[in-house]
Structure formats: structure tokens, C-alpha cells
Image 1: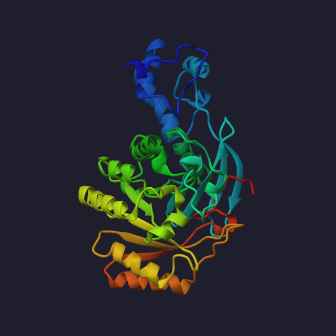
Image 2: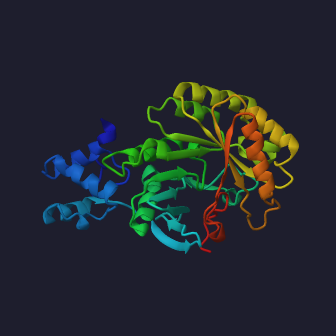
Image 3: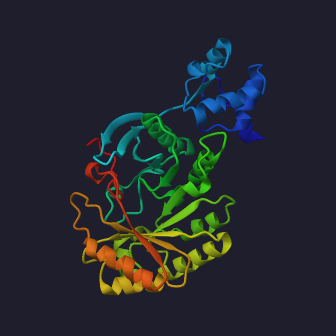
Amino acid sequence: MAEENLHDSPATALDLHSCTHGQLLALMEELGQPAFRAKQIEDWVWSKGVGDPAQMTNLSKALRDALSERVGAAGASELARQVSEDGSRKYLLGFSDGAAVECVGMPSPRKLSVCVSTQAGCAMGCAFCATGRAGLVRSLTAGEIYEQVMHVRNDFNSRVTSVVFMGQGEPFANYDETLKALRKLNDPDALGIGARHLTVSTCGLIPQILKFANEPEQFTLAVSLHSTIQKTRNVLMPGVRRFSLVHLYAALGEYVNKTGRRPTYEYALIGGVNDTEEEIDSLCDFCRGTLCHVNIIQLNEVSGSPFKPSTPEKAQQFVERLARVGVEATIRNSRGADIDAACGQLRQRVR
């Protein structure tokens, strides 16, 4: 039970965002408190978004004082906040070690969706994406991912109905912490968001896709495809060159067979690059006869990038051609493009 041990020194604070339930129980025993106090503390942290023991008002003052000396919840600080014309809000959150990430809140009638980051920066190096230009700083903990959702929830003062792991970073390159965050968001004792309303987007890391297929929860999978011609995809997505489209196709087939769930393919249309007749024919061949949904995304422009968005007419053509082979496709309405909060635009800057 070594993992349940408290820190060696009382001077070292127990991080409430990363400690286990067992560690909290052990601390309560050490402080002479009943076991149910651990559950009360977890309710403050995960349901109410409170990490300061002084604010945990259903605990005695003596216990709050003792906790203040023994625990912490290294929270993120808001470094910047921008509001889009469409009501979306983008936040730059900073952590105590200097790492920073962006997350986005996207409201609609009776709903609030949050886009979170799983890493500060990204190592995938996708040619059309702003995030990867500065490389990877570090991966986030499950608590840091969860805290982004809480920050947005508190700012909107509204219940979060869905979360998409489509911000900075490759979620499956941080698989364990991503899964912990998914499970905590899904936990009825935390935010209780339905598994099917929690979506993870990957560039196509095949071992993790196969692993994800074996998880018991019904989380949703999205795959950034962007081309089904290998030479084009290699240029656009150099970080996954080692995972061929042939093997990706097989892995996605296995995912569908095991889960019965429909993956979503994300396809950002880039003028003259992946919107040609050859590309659309190839995409139709890749999707024909499979269980999938295709999200057509008008490329969001990034300052300094040579890539430009395709035309709305091309996007509609993709939808119609896919429909002819029995594949459902929609054109995604990008949110927050005017504040660089849309897909591919997050880049950890104040303005």
C-alpha cells in the first residue's frame, strides 16, 4: 500500500488535485477525524471547485486549520481572458511552474461545452496548427485538466454539459492522466458529465486507440484525419508519420467492433492541399462501408501560416460526395475564431 502513504514530511503539502482517496483517509485517521470527512473534502474539491480548506465551511475550524497546514491545491491563475462575438470565452491559465495552457468555454441555449488542453504545447507538429510551433513544454495532470473545466464553469456560473479534449496537446500522448480526468468528469460525485458527452481527439496514435477501445466507459473518440492520402497526411501531420493510414484504418475497425461506437473523423479543409478531387475520392474510399461520422472543418487561419481555408462550396461538395457513399458528414461551425479560440489556433499567448 505504498501508494497510499502520506508524504514523508508534514511540511510537504498533500496536493488535493492529485492525491488518492486512500491518502485522504490516512490523513483523516492521523488527524483523529472520521472517515466521512475525506468525502466532504473531495466534494469541495471536485464538485465545488474549492481547494482552500479555509473555505470548506462544513468542516470544524480546528480541522480547517489543521488541513491548511497539511494540504494544498496548487490552482491555476487566469493570465488572460477574451470574449468572442459569438459568446465563446478563451482563457489562458498559468500554473505554479510557469507552464500555461488555453481552454475555451462555448455556450449555447441550455448547454455549455468546454474545450480543454491536455498538454502545455504539443509535440505533434501539425503543419496547420498554431499550438505545435513552440513544441511541447510538459503534459498536464488530471487535476490540471479538470481544473480548466471548473474554471470555465465558475466563470459562466453554469453547468458544463460536455467537454472536448481538443485543445493544446495530444491527449493520447498523455493517456493515463487524460483517462483519469475523463473518469473524474464522469464521476457522479464530481461533475457527473455523461460519458458520451466527453470526447477525446487524437491525431491517430494507434496503440492508444486500441487501448481506449478496451476501456469500460462509453467515452467518444474523434480522430484528426485531414487527409487519407499518405503523402499528404505525412506533410500535414508529421508527428504521426510512423502510423500508416492502412494500420489506422484497421485500428479504427477494431475499435468499432469492440465498442459498437461511431468514431468521428475531423477533416480541416485546406485550399489546394486536401480539397482536391483525388483527396475527396480517397476520403470516400476510406469511409465507405464503415461506421463513422465526418466533421468537415473550414481551416481556421493562423498568422504566418502558408495554408488558407478552402471554400464553402468545397465543404458542401465534401458533404454531398460522402453522402453518396452512405457516410454522414457535417460542416462544423467553428467557435471563437475572432479571438483565436477555434480549432488549431490555440498558442499560449496573452493576446
